[in-house]
Image (cartoon, rainbow, N blue to C red):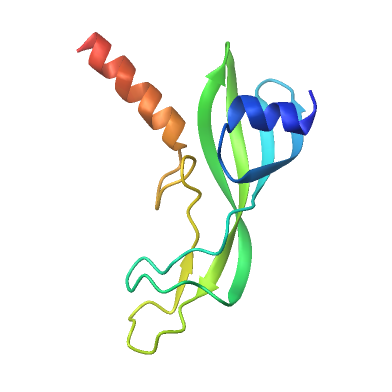
Length: 119
């Protein structure tokens, strides 16, 4: 499956670029954030300087009976406002990631809807 087709199926309207898809026991998707620089979560100042990048691993909704894992490369930024307590912060990809979560927002919503139906 071409990466554009994977992006359209797994990440509709989300600012990511799929670099690679591996299909073994489960599906591993390697993706990179393509969103504009984030704002500091404390002072809301737009980031101007990138600190570094790193990979996050997120569980996503299954495809049929296969588990989907997303390895997402995100950027860490400096907060340049001197009065801000936070010196660096990591971007969040709206519609895909949230702070301190190891599951995608899609999986969280999917599990919530199942729990409501069963509850």
